[in-house]
Image (tube, rainbow, N blue to C red; front, side, top):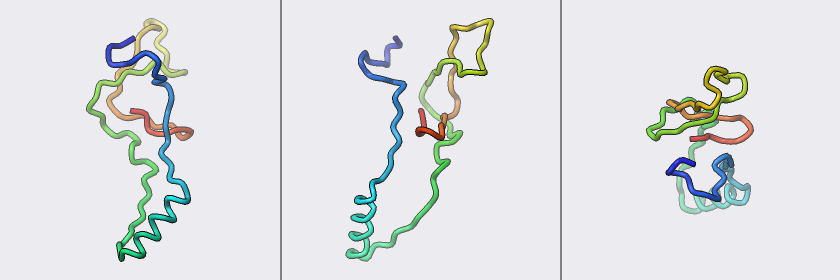
Length: 89
């Protein structure tokens, strides 16, 4: 186990931040009462291929295995994105 990881933490687990409808309604009500301007933007690909500053290593993904070096890992240069989860950094 690498030194930066702690036992008992599932580093394969992903988290997708999604706003609940109640929070959005509260934000809209507060902005309306306070006279704030709200802007909408699409950030579906905000983390897609973003450069990362940390050292991050991943197992060899299916279809990209190196059969000469099956125990090697890949060092990421850019962030990964999965449609079924979220940005994995």
